[in-house]
Length: 259
Image (cartoon, rainbow, N blue to C red):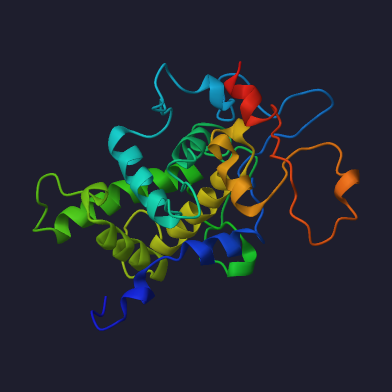
Protein backbone atom coordinates (compact mmCIF):
# COMPACT_ATOMS: atom_id res chain seq x y z
CA UNK A 1 0.00 0.00 0.00
CA UNK A 2 1.26 3.49 -0.81
CA UNK A 3 2.87 4.95 2.33
CA UNK A 4 1.96 8.47 1.16
CA UNK A 5 -1.74 7.80 1.71
CA UNK A 6 -2.95 9.61 4.88
CA UNK A 7 -3.50 7.46 7.95
CA UNK A 8 -7.23 8.20 8.03
CA UNK A 9 -7.54 6.48 4.64
CA UNK A 10 -6.48 3.20 6.20
CA UNK A 11 -8.39 3.47 9.45
CA UNK A 12 -11.70 1.64 9.44
CA UNK A 13 -14.21 4.07 10.91
CA UNK A 14 -16.46 2.60 13.56
CA UNK A 15 -18.96 5.41 13.06
CA UNK A 16 -19.05 4.80 9.28
CA UNK A 17 -19.50 1.08 9.83
CA UNK A 18 -22.31 1.51 12.33
CA UNK A 19 -24.12 4.00 10.14
CA UNK A 20 -23.91 1.67 7.15
CA UNK A 21 -25.02 -1.25 9.27
CA UNK A 22 -28.36 0.32 10.10
CA UNK A 23 -29.44 -0.10 6.50
CA UNK A 24 -28.41 -3.76 6.37
CA UNK A 25 -30.29 -6.78 7.71
CA UNK A 26 -28.92 -7.78 11.08
CA UNK A 27 -29.45 -11.52 10.98
CA UNK A 28 -29.32 -12.71 7.40
CA UNK A 29 -27.06 -15.60 8.32
CA UNK A 30 -29.72 -16.97 10.65
CA UNK A 31 -31.65 -19.36 8.48
CA UNK A 32 -34.13 -20.69 11.04
CA UNK A 33 -37.69 -19.38 11.10
CA UNK A 34 -40.18 -18.81 13.87
CA UNK A 35 -42.90 -21.35 13.21
CA UNK A 36 -45.88 -21.44 15.57
CA UNK A 37 -44.39 -21.96 19.06
CA UNK A 38 -40.91 -23.09 17.95
CA UNK A 39 -37.81 -21.24 19.13
CA UNK A 40 -35.44 -20.10 16.34
CA UNK A 41 -32.78 -22.64 17.21
CA UNK A 42 -32.27 -26.35 17.52
CA UNK A 43 -30.28 -28.13 20.19
CA UNK A 44 -26.77 -29.02 19.06
CA UNK A 45 -26.91 -26.80 15.97
CA UNK A 46 -25.23 -23.45 15.32
CA UNK A 47 -28.02 -21.26 16.64
CA UNK A 48 -27.94 -22.38 20.28
CA UNK A 49 -28.69 -19.72 22.91
CA UNK A 50 -25.72 -17.91 24.45
CA UNK A 51 -26.30 -19.50 27.86
CA UNK A 52 -25.78 -22.96 26.37
CA UNK A 53 -22.63 -22.29 24.39
CA UNK A 54 -20.19 -21.21 27.08
CA UNK A 55 -18.33 -23.23 29.66
CA UNK A 56 -17.89 -22.29 33.31
CA UNK A 57 -15.77 -19.25 32.39
CA UNK A 58 -16.51 -16.23 30.26
CA UNK A 59 -14.43 -17.67 27.43
CA UNK A 60 -16.45 -19.24 24.59
CA UNK A 61 -16.01 -22.83 23.53
CA UNK A 62 -15.72 -22.69 19.75
CA UNK A 63 -17.41 -25.36 17.67
CA UNK A 64 -15.98 -24.53 14.24
CA UNK A 65 -12.87 -22.38 14.61
CA UNK A 66 -9.49 -23.82 15.46
CA UNK A 67 -7.35 -21.94 17.98
CA UNK A 68 -5.45 -20.16 15.20
CA UNK A 69 -8.65 -19.31 13.30
CA UNK A 70 -10.44 -17.97 16.37
CA UNK A 71 -7.44 -15.78 17.25
CA UNK A 72 -7.50 -14.21 13.78
CA UNK A 73 -11.27 -13.68 13.78
CA UNK A 74 -11.22 -12.18 17.27
CA UNK A 75 -8.48 -9.74 16.24
CA UNK A 76 -10.21 -8.85 12.97
CA UNK A 77 -13.67 -8.13 14.38
CA UNK A 78 -12.07 -6.11 17.17
CA UNK A 79 -10.71 -3.79 14.47
CA UNK A 80 -13.92 -3.71 12.40
CA UNK A 81 -15.99 -2.59 15.40
CA UNK A 82 -13.51 -1.59 18.10
CA UNK A 83 -14.39 -0.78 21.67
CA UNK A 84 -14.29 2.98 22.23
CA UNK A 85 -16.03 5.79 24.08
CA UNK A 86 -19.30 4.75 22.42
CA UNK A 87 -19.23 1.38 24.16
CA UNK A 88 -18.02 -2.23 23.77
CA UNK A 89 -16.89 -3.47 20.37
CA UNK A 90 -17.51 -6.64 18.39
CA UNK A 91 -15.13 -8.76 20.44
CA UNK A 92 -16.75 -7.78 23.73
CA UNK A 93 -20.18 -8.35 22.19
CA UNK A 94 -19.34 -11.98 21.40
CA UNK A 95 -19.35 -11.60 17.62
CA UNK A 96 -16.72 -14.37 17.11
CA UNK A 97 -19.04 -16.77 18.96
CA UNK A 98 -21.94 -15.76 16.71
CA UNK A 99 -19.86 -16.34 13.55
CA UNK A 100 -18.53 -19.64 14.90
CA UNK A 101 -22.03 -20.97 15.60
CA UNK A 102 -23.27 -19.95 12.16
CA UNK A 103 -20.33 -21.61 10.40
CA UNK A 104 -20.77 -24.76 12.47
CA UNK A 105 -24.41 -25.03 11.41
CA UNK A 106 -26.57 -25.05 8.32
CA UNK A 107 -25.51 -21.55 7.24
CA UNK A 108 -21.86 -22.58 7.19
CA UNK A 109 -22.74 -25.61 5.06
CA UNK A 110 -25.01 -23.54 2.76
CA UNK A 111 -27.67 -26.22 3.19
CA UNK A 112 -30.52 -24.01 1.98
CA UNK A 113 -28.69 -22.43 -0.94
CA UNK A 114 -28.40 -23.43 -4.58
CA UNK A 115 -24.76 -24.49 -4.82
CA UNK A 116 -24.53 -26.04 -8.27
CA UNK A 117 -22.62 -24.53 -11.20
CA UNK A 118 -21.81 -22.56 -13.19
CA UNK A 119 -19.40 -20.69 -10.94
CA UNK A 120 -18.27 -17.88 -13.22
CA UNK A 121 -17.45 -14.55 -11.59
CA UNK A 122 -20.80 -12.82 -11.36
CA UNK A 123 -21.93 -9.24 -11.16
CA UNK A 124 -22.52 -7.67 -7.73
CA UNK A 125 -26.27 -7.84 -8.41
CA UNK A 126 -26.13 -11.61 -8.94
CA UNK A 127 -25.38 -12.53 -5.33
CA UNK A 128 -23.41 -15.51 -4.10
CA UNK A 129 -21.48 -17.09 -6.99
CA UNK A 130 -18.73 -19.28 -5.51
CA UNK A 131 -18.76 -23.05 -5.19
CA UNK A 132 -17.39 -22.71 -1.65
CA UNK A 133 -19.69 -22.74 1.35
CA UNK A 134 -19.33 -19.91 3.91
CA UNK A 135 -17.45 -22.34 6.15
CA UNK A 136 -15.13 -23.20 3.25
CA UNK A 137 -14.48 -19.54 2.53
CA UNK A 138 -13.53 -18.84 6.13
CA UNK A 139 -11.35 -21.94 6.45
CA UNK A 140 -9.39 -21.19 3.29
CA UNK A 141 -9.10 -17.44 3.80
CA UNK A 142 -8.04 -17.54 7.45
CA UNK A 143 -5.28 -20.04 6.72
CA UNK A 144 -3.94 -18.04 3.78
CA UNK A 145 -4.11 -14.68 5.57
CA UNK A 146 -1.90 -15.95 8.37
CA UNK A 147 0.44 -17.49 5.80
CA UNK A 148 0.65 -14.16 3.94
CA UNK A 149 1.36 -12.30 7.19
CA UNK A 150 4.12 -14.75 8.08
CA UNK A 151 5.66 -14.42 4.61
CA UNK A 152 5.57 -10.63 4.76
CA UNK A 153 7.15 -10.69 8.22
CA UNK A 154 10.41 -12.16 7.02
CA UNK A 155 9.92 -15.06 4.69
CA UNK A 156 7.61 -17.08 6.88
CA UNK A 157 8.90 -16.03 10.29
CA UNK A 158 7.81 -18.47 12.98
CA UNK A 159 4.97 -17.18 15.11
CA UNK A 160 4.05 -14.25 12.85
CA UNK A 161 0.26 -14.15 12.60
CA UNK A 162 -2.44 -11.56 12.00
CA UNK A 163 -3.54 -11.73 15.64
CA UNK A 164 -0.03 -10.77 16.84
CA UNK A 165 0.25 -7.68 14.66
CA UNK A 166 -0.08 -4.18 16.07
CA UNK A 167 -3.58 -2.69 15.60
CA UNK A 168 -2.37 -0.29 12.91
CA UNK A 169 -0.88 -3.21 10.95
CA UNK A 170 -4.08 -5.21 11.35
CA UNK A 171 -6.00 -2.24 9.92
CA UNK A 172 -3.60 -2.13 6.97
CA UNK A 173 -4.11 -5.83 6.21
CA UNK A 174 -7.88 -5.51 6.48
CA UNK A 175 -7.80 -2.53 4.14
CA UNK A 176 -5.77 -4.54 1.64
CA UNK A 177 -8.24 -7.41 1.83
CA UNK A 178 -11.14 -5.00 1.29
CA UNK A 179 -9.39 -3.46 -1.72
CA UNK A 180 -8.32 -6.85 -3.15
CA UNK A 181 -4.63 -5.94 -2.90
CA UNK A 182 -3.86 -9.07 -0.89
CA UNK A 183 -4.13 -12.09 -3.18
CA UNK A 184 -5.42 -15.35 -1.75
CA UNK A 185 -5.34 -18.62 -3.70
CA UNK A 186 -8.33 -20.35 -2.12
CA UNK A 187 -10.82 -17.46 -2.16
CA UNK A 188 -11.25 -13.94 -3.47
CA UNK A 189 -9.92 -11.56 -0.80
CA UNK A 190 -12.62 -8.94 -1.44
CA UNK A 191 -15.36 -11.55 -1.20
CA UNK A 192 -13.99 -12.83 2.09
CA UNK A 193 -13.72 -9.34 3.57
CA UNK A 194 -17.30 -8.55 2.52
CA UNK A 195 -18.52 -11.80 4.14
CA UNK A 196 -16.55 -11.15 7.33
CA UNK A 197 -17.85 -7.58 7.55
CA UNK A 198 -21.45 -8.67 6.94
CA UNK A 199 -21.23 -11.44 9.55
CA UNK A 200 -19.61 -9.04 12.03
CA UNK A 201 -22.50 -6.61 11.68
CA UNK A 202 -25.00 -9.45 11.99
CA UNK A 203 -23.36 -10.69 15.19
CA UNK A 204 -23.24 -7.20 16.66
CA UNK A 205 -26.94 -6.47 16.05
CA UNK A 206 -28.74 -9.82 15.99
CA UNK A 207 -30.69 -11.11 18.96
CA UNK A 208 -28.38 -12.35 21.75
CA UNK A 209 -29.94 -15.80 21.44
CA UNK A 210 -27.56 -16.40 18.52
CA UNK A 211 -24.39 -15.84 20.56
CA UNK A 212 -23.51 -12.23 19.68
CA UNK A 213 -24.80 -8.83 20.85
CA UNK A 214 -23.83 -9.82 24.38
CA UNK A 215 -25.73 -7.79 26.99
CA UNK A 216 -27.50 -6.22 23.98
CA UNK A 217 -24.66 -3.73 23.58
CA UNK A 218 -25.36 -3.30 19.86
CA UNK A 219 -29.01 -2.45 20.47
CA UNK A 220 -28.13 -0.06 23.28
CA UNK A 221 -25.68 1.74 21.00
CA UNK A 222 -28.32 2.55 18.38
CA UNK A 223 -31.33 2.80 20.71
CA UNK A 224 -33.09 -0.27 19.32
CA UNK A 225 -35.83 -1.55 21.70
CA UNK A 226 -35.55 -5.17 20.60
CA UNK A 227 -38.50 -7.55 20.81
CA UNK A 228 -40.79 -5.52 23.05
CA UNK A 229 -44.38 -6.47 22.33
CA UNK A 230 -46.09 -3.12 22.95
CA UNK A 231 -44.83 0.34 21.90
CA UNK A 232 -48.19 2.14 21.95
CA UNK A 233 -47.38 4.48 24.87
CA UNK A 234 -44.39 5.87 22.93
CA UNK A 235 -45.63 6.00 19.32
CA UNK A 236 -46.75 9.64 19.52
CA UNK A 237 -43.74 10.87 21.52
CA UNK A 238 -41.79 12.19 18.57
CA UNK A 239 -38.27 13.46 19.18
CA UNK A 240 -38.09 11.96 22.67
CA UNK A 241 -35.56 9.37 23.74
CA UNK A 242 -36.97 5.87 24.20
CA UNK A 243 -36.71 5.30 27.98
CA UNK A 244 -36.89 1.50 28.29
CA UNK A 245 -34.02 -1.03 28.01
CA UNK A 246 -34.02 -3.44 25.06
CA UNK A 247 -35.64 -6.85 25.30
CA UNK A 248 -34.46 -9.95 23.45
CA UNK A 249 -36.30 -13.12 22.50
CA UNK A 250 -35.34 -14.59 25.88
CA UNK A 251 -36.05 -11.41 27.83
CA UNK A 252 -34.01 -8.57 29.31
CA UNK A 253 -30.35 -8.74 30.26
CA UNK A 254 -31.26 -8.23 33.93
CA UNK A 255 -33.58 -11.23 33.85
CA UNK A 256 -30.98 -13.46 32.20
CA UNK A 257 -28.33 -12.52 34.78
CA UNK A 258 -30.67 -13.37 37.63
CA UNK A 259 -31.39 -16.87 36.38
